[in-house]
Length: 449
Image (cartoon, rainbow, N blue to C red):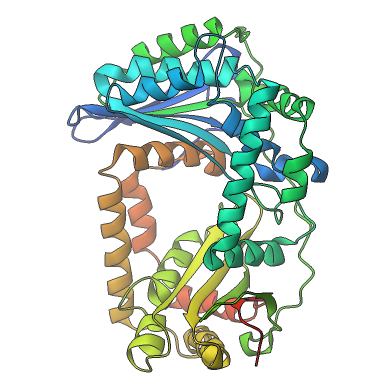
């Protein structure tokens, strides 16, 4: 059974998986409320480490949009003990790798190294998270880098189309609908004080989640982590109240204003570009990350547009030759979600392709899916999960997601069991809901003829 990570019973130390023939997974709450989750795997000679903060672009005010992403960049620009070059060199000289990701609901700093170099990776990443200088001159330089990053995304029709699709589904005037990286205007207006205030508000012990997977010792890592955070100046008092062991992650999301309807009736939101193809995003709101239907959604997406044997690929590309690329996708957050389909085609074919994409979900609603499609989808999902979890980075990410999003720990076998329990009727029922949830279409390409 899944283990709840949110109650008072989720105290100082929990054994989440006992080891033996499988992984040894432990969770410890350190002084100050810092949470450490590890999976020990002695079959590898590496380790992947992640430092997670439950703060993303949805936690910004409109005037400070982009500050979370800017802060992520600045943490690589130097601490009291290390220059920006020192931080980069630390991983390069041991053959490791490091990076960071800012998302709508979290930020994570991560590194992958040989297991012998895990203390080094921990020292560098904790130094960044606790002791970055956030120098004003670094902000001015990095601001230009971020503006180039935003410009690069705008030049890519798939990036700009997907960003606009998210905004339209989730609400362009809501925190969730705003771009993760901010805009040209908001990033240009960010001040040193804005970034420092954002850092002070969110980079605190009770918000920090550390996950690590690989050839490691949990107790040794816990001791080193507490030492490095204290060395960085963080106050780590004993006896943190249970209510402070997890940050308040519940957020409210205003409902998007678009009216659901059939796919063919959705009026496109156009981004005009001098392109040879029209890039189409079509979909609407869907289930959130904690929904019990999330396993059904995985199966539905696999059948609809998850590979070369999917309905979208076979019926629109293989049988009719209307596109080169077509697929379906979904995204889920704590209190919101969306589903969509993407295709790129010559402009004259766009309306036909949209009609066919919508028809595939309607076919699922009206006639269900076959036993063969269910078998293939379950095989695809379970196989991809098994292959992905051979990578320590994927497993590190899974631990962070379970802690920050699900709030409960379940084993891979339990997840696979849930997936295997999805029925064809479950898929049909969810398809019926999606077929009535089309709100948004985004076209990126030349003017409509």
